[in-house]
Amino acid sequence: MRLSVPWLATRATPFGDSREAVLAALTQMRADLTAHPLPLPLDRTFSGNDLNTVLFSVNNGPFEALEQKLLTLRAAMDHPAFGALLNVAMTFRVSPLIDVFGEHLLEAGPRLGWWTARNCNEAGWSHDLDQVVTAAQQLATEAPLTYLGMGFTAPCAFWPAAHRDPNPVPLDRITSALLIGNEKDPVTPLSGARSVHVAIPDSRLITISGTQRHLALPETMPNGLPGSIPGTSACATSAVIEYLVHEQLPPTDTTCQPDGQ
Picture (cartoon, rainbow, N blue to C red):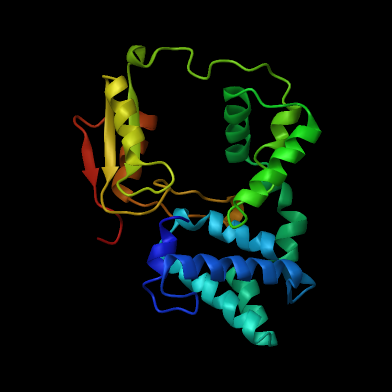
């Protein structure tokens, strides 16, 4: 988010031509959507909370994709005709069928499971729900454009296992590791992967050059459901397959080109 705002300011969009103007425009857009959610076909709506989800996921893809989504929303808010609202529904794949039949598949899959297990075991989370709600309200006030509710923190209030060290084995005793990072990842900077690489002598680092994305490997939803995300680099994906299937690390650290270049 912090990287996309200056970028948007250079694009001659209705959101302004400076960092401050873009932030003000997005803040106002969220306030307007919160007060008056867009009515979409099939009894769906698009609210300020939905905008937060869009802004939170910006670093998973090119900034041009975010720009197009914001322009689609702006057009529907300015002229809420049926065609514009349908365009919003199609752009964000807001479907009652996904909501009703795919909710558990989308929200309780393995990705969320391992993320929750790691997150809740890694730190000492409060089991006091009042404290969890208070902290959530403070975060919403401090970061209204990117706050995503209590979905990431509330599960830990009910986590049954006691806190423990997530890395019981010293890093220098790990005999094999494959590390992957996008060169310009704005969510998990490449510097972190480089530090771990130094701490694990027998590791290899794959750097995907030039990309400003967060995800490196493809994420595929089962049965072709919306939500699948293509990988950043087939070169990196191939190296991962060799490592996980054949237990073969690259002979040296590798720089991969992103797909399409």
